[in-house]
Image (cartoon, rainbow, N blue to C red; front, side, top):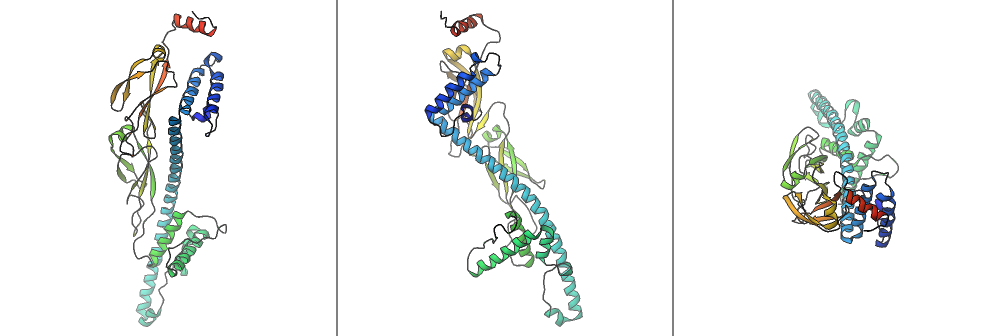
Length: 375
């Protein structure tokens, strides 16, 4: 179902009286009797009725608001994870380039120092061992050549901030003059700075490589059976993830040590954002499952019993009399496993359908009701 607030044209803080008035106005406008030439009028009328059914009930309205807020948060997390993955990929490529050039520079320095020791032991002992590349290029110069001046400035500023923090016995801070240089992703800053520190031998313990994010597609059945799924990492590695209770659409699972791997650094983590594949029977909202049940016109008016498919098998439900397409029947504890030790619900959405062929008696009755001729 689409956003009920948008369907009724009301704000999210609308009062019940305002919602009811909006529903009446909308229902009158889209009523099938007023739109006989519009084949979609019936479905639009039912959709508006369903929207009102959600918003008129305080508890259902609260549940919808929470689910909508969760969905918005999930989308924000998904976008952030996608952007982080792109930044991690670029940072890894640049980091490998830095490592390659620094390694070459280190080899050249070692060769030059060996030659100097062979010529003069005393001169060799007095010569400072400066880490630099070809033609005296320092790591900062190399960073600037590969990443640009902004990256080099960030690394220098971070190093200065760490030195100052160490003198003051405080936590290292990242120094940056706001507005003076274009922003650089924190992932790239940390990665570049850690490589420079490690190359110079100023890092006592291995640092952790950046985390990477992937999207993990699972099925409703996977979540109900708590299956183990296989993920494909950025470097084509296969990683297994055991699904747990409390996981649903948008949940982010952290797999420690399964992320970015760089030589001399502790492996980063793999962040798997769950995406639930489309299911022919159920639709997922939080930990609740939604399904659709078609009922006849006579059952909608008079009520009756019907059978509905649930995750735990077929169940019989009672349809209340005068149930329209905006009504639902909730079966407790037949949804996904939640994070409170229980399960969500199965929400059965009723859909009234007519017979395949027109019924003369029903048609005549509706004609009499439209024109006010009751028999």
